[in-house]
Length: 115
Length: 116
Image 1 (cartoon, chains in turn yellow, brown):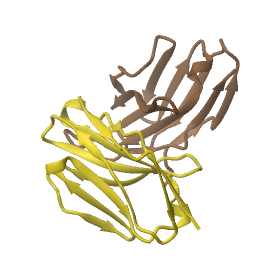
Image 2 (cartoon, chains in turn cyan, blue; image 1 turned 180 degrees about the vertical axis):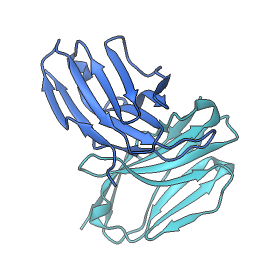
Image 3 (cartoon, chains in turn yellow, cyan; image 1 turned 90 degrees about the horizontal axis):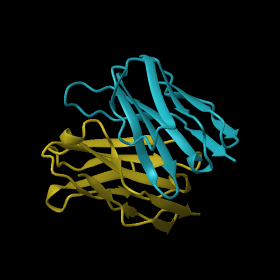
């Protein structure tokens, strides 16, 4: 069975603060993929990143960065210098070889960036 | 390029009525997924198709729900009869999956269903 845990239900920060969203996963697969999606107030789900289990290099994309650590089964997401437009629900998700193409989502973290 | 297209965007119906949700995946994608999102249960996969064939329908809540994919560019999710507890946002997503590859899924805008 697969499981994704996002322990932070809600986070509130002030603009320009850095914020890290935590994601911890469980899987018995040796090959698996991790994803982050953003769901802004408008409701659509926007793909942010995909990372496979063999690539532990951290990734940076503009103000976004991701820290993948297999030793702790974590795939954390950091937003640097947050902006009001970053306010959204962020979902971490997992798929593995035994689950086929099925994505297992975490519960989501509601991020509010205040001006 | 057009993303995943869903219709209708909003649907309000009365209990007992049939509801049909429609999805057009991204051209060239060979996998299609139907999800439901509620406050109580979060995002849950209902069913997914690969090359128009249903692969996993274990998430379909009950026999009132059915899904079809008659061709690579169209899928429907039908609820008959609908019940108030079916009220949710239903998302369709598509992906290009080759072998054991796991590409990202691209989501449509969703259909907000309200059953009175």
